[in-house]
Length: 383
Image (cartoon, rainbow, N blue to C red; front, side):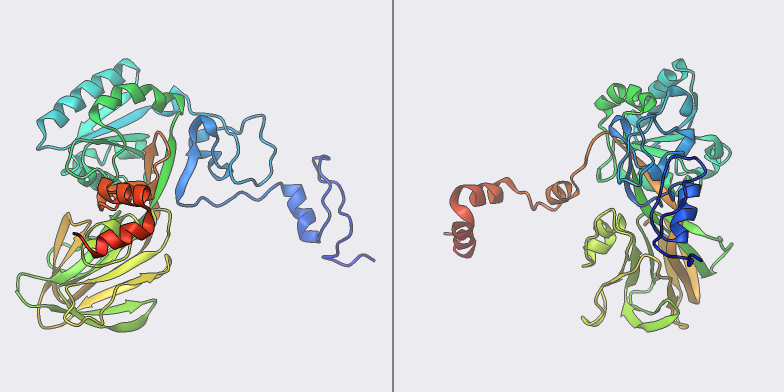
């Protein structure tokens, strides 16, 4: 009698095509087919160059005839067609005249393609609530702040987001205004990639006024002192364990995307956008021992104010809430993802180096021409 789980040769699968050597578990897997891969943050789909098998059925995409069924990292899949982007929402910055004009021109162009289009300002998300469940793509005309608002408004609706740079910050946007007409056909031909960004979910506790249930955040969640000019006492729990009580202006919980924002200004570390971790950063702590921490992505973080003074809560630096004394917030990783459209590879470190002036031309020239050793000498002796 053959033992269960032995390495004996399994029978052919029901499809009659594959013979698998291994345990009984392996036999059952052979009958059922390969186990689907779990979607991960990062670039999940690769347009005409191929997309991961984990998202083969996203929006009804079909696996191409050339797919072998094996669990490879990147496989060749069918591309999107115009019928798969049926509804497009356009968010525009209300204080930029060029954004409103660009929104009108873009809506007219998309209407000619037979696409259902609506326009709104992300500052008034209630206007777009009824449209988001049927929306396939959000085009944001503004800066990074407009994308943050769009990501929060569309959380849970699985909308794609394309950012067009009309603002001051351009870390999340993909196109310049003059590039938009060139890339509109690529959206309907499937010539794009999707970069998934991890989001956070905040549950406020002790909010002054009507308490919201859950608040999505793409960048960060911050709790801090109110209008008083003195630091707040903030208790920190991670996974139900008390880490300690921090005396600081505020404490920031940031995602990988938000690690290059306010958290970085407060001395926090930089995370790669594909990292699933979160960062906990005290802002202007009273004691230097209150150092920032990198926590696992599945950590549940609770922050509570002291019982003597009120405080404030903000989400992505845009949605402020007043907190009662003893109030706070519970933060965890959200199940929603911000799905950003990319038309090419975006080297993160090159982009980061330009933003932080690490790629200053004079520094690079000094290293490339005189060598690292001479560069060190020049740095030590400016004369």
